Image (cartoon, helix red, strand yellow):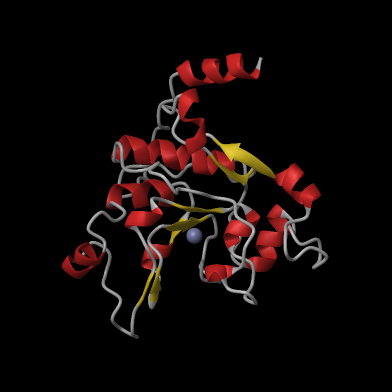
Length: 217
Ligand SMILES: [Zn+2]
């Protein structure tokens, strides 16, 4: 039954992009995606309020609370064009962010065909920031962040004032197959913040569903 359903899902044509509302058209042409959540979280406290606490108040720290995982984490199906045989390319995310993630991937695939979805693209991962031992939980641990094509978009730390602007000649030299502007615009139109805009620690693989950066990775 589930195979039949996934086959049916695969042959359904993706919905057309929503028409931009009059007078509110971003420069890149995508209308803001109107998903099920009223607002994006601005900080960690609001992230926990909206998406729950995978540590259950600190009871779980080496792994996520299995009850939270069962209630919260779902498979993001990525671009609707993916076929069932490519199911390994899907990745886990929080169920409340999944509609935004799926639409962002759909828009990115339309704007920059073939760029996203290379091996390594991944969302939910219960870990601390920058894989540290004692730092705060990464937003990946809440299922609200995704790393796109990590092999081509590795994080780099720069001296103060030395972070190259995205898509400048220096940026293109460091990340020759880095995130295209069209992909970033697709994600930003769906409410994601991009780690490639961070100064000092630039993480261009990273996109998170948080309105303002509070923590790194
Ligand atoms: Zn990341």
